[in-house]
Image 1 (cartoon, helix red, strand yellow):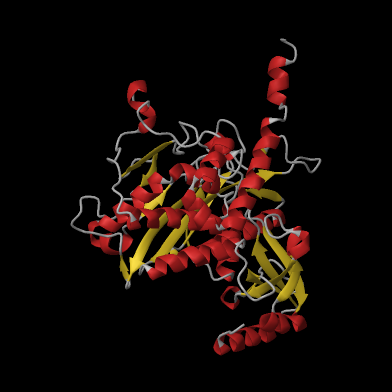
Image 2: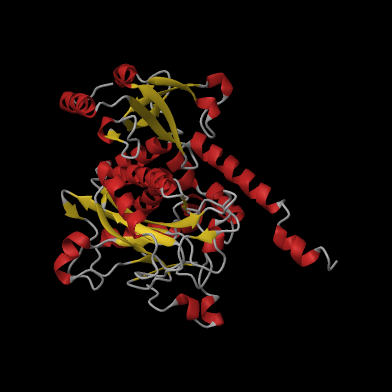
Length: 446
């Protein structure tokens, strides 16, 4: 592999200065789970030059046993020290997955995003994103279990006096900063025990890497404080769930291609076509951006989560919202916010699917429907019946994904089939299981 000589020297100097002893090679499976293999530092440079072999058949969605040999190649731009491994200095580097013949593996989620970003680049665009990742902190029970759930505090949105996690959030911010991630805001969220820490807008591959780093870091820091951090979409019935609203825009020749100061919403024609593409493909996107059975417990009316396929300027019940910006910042800050994703989603596949849908709208010059500025949850039943709803379950979402030619082309044949297989198995397991709710409700009555 060809690497920037200056970056190589920079890493060599850093390893010597910080006495780095181990390096963790990280990559992501189709579910967005971080996989890692550690190396003593003396073997790292051979991996930089030649890659590291691993058994792809042991990773769901990768290869079959008969074709299991695969290679990890480090992306040196992601090399950083792990701040919580203080006793034995350790670094991590995010890797791309390759086949033995030296070609990128089409089923690598990071590689899928790279392919769609290249498609955008060929049209002259750079895709820029910022995910807002919400999470819960829970106390362990005396026996070390997590259930029944014990939220770490009883605070609400922006609360101070009842917020018990000030120090934990600040430690999380320090961890992100150690990885070179710029944090812009941190606060308590709406639900008890719920929090949000936002990082800076940036190129989509970088922000997807940051999102994976954030999840790993937050779980580690929470564990140090005797807490459990979860990005599960809806852990507590009757409370708001965890969302991952994604702010997004396209840039062209150093300018925001979504901005038009003369437009009433500050949006260009390109932005409106992009919105139209995402709305057109919203149902098939659902299996990617809301990928769990539990995701659809969050996507119900009344909890700031979108249910209907719509867009609006500031309406938080819409699927796509246009965040308000000051007139002086329209040229740089105009963007759109997709509000359906949750943080259980694989960020590489999420951004790839979102970008693919938006680009399809641009290529086909789609027009978005009329903006819905009213609160959709409070419309009359007759008016609400005319709206188009998002899928109501993972099973329905997987069916939409299966029928989508765009998702098939975006994912590639191998990953498209693997994803359908994995999510169908998850849905089948759920729909054939018998829950405690069913036993409590029916066992003694029938």
